[in-house]
Image 1 (spheres, rainbow, N blue to C red):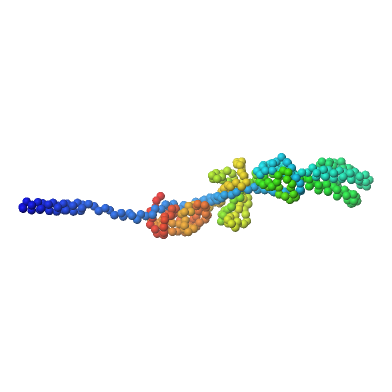
Image 2 (image 1 turned 180 degrees about the horizontal axis):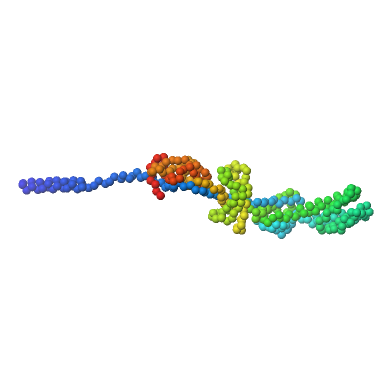
Length: 373
């Protein structure tokens, strides 16, 4: 019995000792530190305000157009014949090339017949001129001899007296002469020559077809005289002036030529609220340029004194920004001078202030932030 009591007491003692040891060990264990940094401060990037002189370029896309575009039309009726220059869109030609010719053999024969009848009439009247107007006879004789059936009729001799004028009018010499001059003009209208180096942009006829009076036959452009038509926002037009030098850029932003601002529209396009300006292309590098091609124009604008350029993402509500004072955000107003595509030019802050260029989410005045360089 005593032995059982001893065993029970030992077990109880062991359990008590284990509990004391466990309690002691728990007391030695440190409680985990609470996460005191759960509410992290927003991180902002800043840029020190520093004013300087800035060039304010404006870059806009435009379309190349020819400075000179002409519609060719017929003033006489007739069949179109071969000239040597194909009537095809895109066909190039040189100044003076015969572009369109209307069949003219019958008109030439009629003109020769008119001149022949006129010579016959002069021959019949030369003896009377020699008798009555001997002082002017030699000029009329020289005029008679200089008439060539295949060339334009020469100028009429000057009539020296009223009696001589009456004589010429009564014999219808003056009327026949001017009828021949009119026929020569009409004959010349059967041939249309190129007024400049260029190419066809529109062709509405072909060899063998019949052209009517006033019919539009083709459209041509002067290919070496190109302008860049650029629509510019009306708010930016004040920065552009006639004769300003303009850089012409390709699709990669590389300068391929220069130009000069030669015209500005005096009205705003109702659909786009833009004003068209026209840049004369110099093409001093001899780059291949084509009507209808889209290029970019960089207008150099003007120099803005005491200003700073910053990303438009740093501005909210049109003209509000945040600066950091100590570790707090402060909302301030700026003076926006010029808006660009991705940036803006401004002043109105004190130099040296820390301008927030990356506004944090849910930013507000007096918010506590952490600044990083």
